[in-house]
Length: 215
Image 1 (tube, helix red, strand yellow):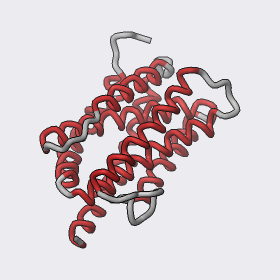
Image 2 (spheres, rainbow, N blue to C red):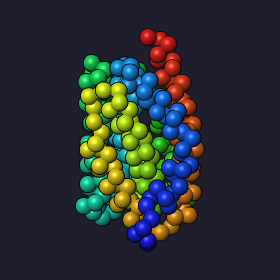
Image 3 (cartoon, helix red, strand yellow):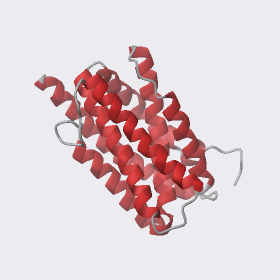
Image 4 (cartoon, rainbow, N blue to C red):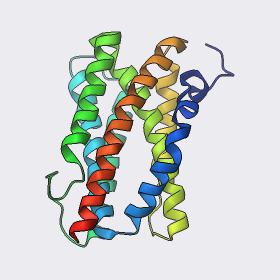
């Protein structure tokens, strides 16, 4: 595998997602200005991080667990805690579990993750799914959290994703190292994820608008 190519170049993810940067930024700017919506959004991120950690645990439980895999598992669980803790801080109330009442677009978020997992597993097989799902998810997480961090800074919200982003960047590098130069597969799977993400984000935007109208 060439050391000169990055996961962004190999996947084509940034280029394909250029049209969605401005709408996602506008959504995040609106969300962070509304504590209730922001809390529910962060609780949704907590749920997705929790689903990621659970996926690692279930898919790897009968395999030889490496230090890298255990580190990835523990960090995903910690990210779920991070978002849950700050969701409760900003929302000013306990947000136990992940319910329709305290989690923005809960069902759509679960469907996004489930369809992504199923689609990639069908493409590469169950044995390889963990690494490919993780790689594609890390691309999305880094892309989204970079925009989110910039919005938080410019909005003056006392919340930093810097440490979390550093860990996601390392996960991305680790998973990319396992792709074995199969950039055609990565580009295809990244494009598949983008299609799912765009549909999911549409539902998120509707959910935010409905929540704002109900306040």
